Image (tube, rainbow over all chains, first blue to last red; front, top):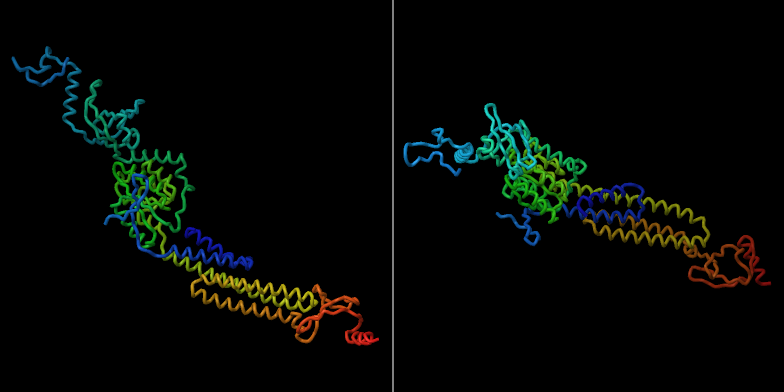
Length: 70
Length: 455
């Protein structure tokens, strides 16, 4: 799932949990899924070092990502 | 008549040049050809500025027109092979610059400019070329707002089609590093001005599509003169942008004029930096967003727990009140159901505990306290159920009669002499046979049995 999908699903889950109509068993399943989506979204926003690479197409049509020349 | 050198000295006799006398008159063709040679030799190809008039595009594909200003008029021809390089077909009144070779058109004897290249000197030609391109794109629906795709909130990879040495790339890189460094930028090099720029940009788009690794593309360059930006008005580039399988942000650093590419792109950014801002989310904002979502999820779960506690308490209360009005046999069944319920609730609490085990420790602490409360509730309910159990009655010294099949025998009407029944007592059960049945208040009837039992 992309970040957007995870977050959208998460928001839908929260909205459902906040409503009064969810049966308890389903609420728990939803909560469980919510945790999974939350973890996915959180993993996406992890920080890392900047990476800029150059796309190079080989003669055989395959692609390579090269570090840019200094 | 062979080729003549009009000015060659005549070797012998008095100095006479062709055309000196009537007797030496030269032909029109020879003179014209001589003039042509002289003119062509005197001018190398040069740029001329003027206004287009008498423009005619011949069926053959050649263009015929004049260049004029307030003082003069110069006939021009542009061969079909050269017209392909022009921005578009010019129209009368446009100011242009034409690069060409001065020559003489022998058949008409006219001075003529053989035009090799045609550029715009005023807005006219640019405007016409632009309008024609836009009209074609519009006809194909490529300018529709509805076509524009939203950018992904968090792209996995951003492709940047630009010059690898340009300032645009540096600007984009700086913004990416500040906002969300973990999103990789992949540069797809292409010249963004001059001859061949359009072709290189188109090729870069095709490469991005074949590669398939990016989910948004920034096409950009810094500002520049209109001629420098012309590749961004090229119809082929516009069509490549439209055909791109992922959204394209156009960032031609030129706030005043909107290029054709800007109109076709999914998003137009005024500068490469702004394009990077649009394509790359701010990590701080996302982190806050995820944190808020997590907090809401936690609160939602808390609410569910609370509600469930209320439900349990309510069910427990109603259950107790109802149970007191039931027969022993019904109570027995109820007890079994109650136990099953308690087990189910217990299992659910266990399962929930497993879910909570996945939570961050801080969250887990709070959640576990809630689970403990839940367990307490379940135990209380179990205790309540137990108090209603027939077994508790037995503990107080009473017996319960039932058929060997387990059906309750709560009334004398259920007994017939000779029937077998079981009597459940505090510490076991007795299988007995009915000898006699007496009806009445229990103590009176019991006395009657005693007498009847010993006749």
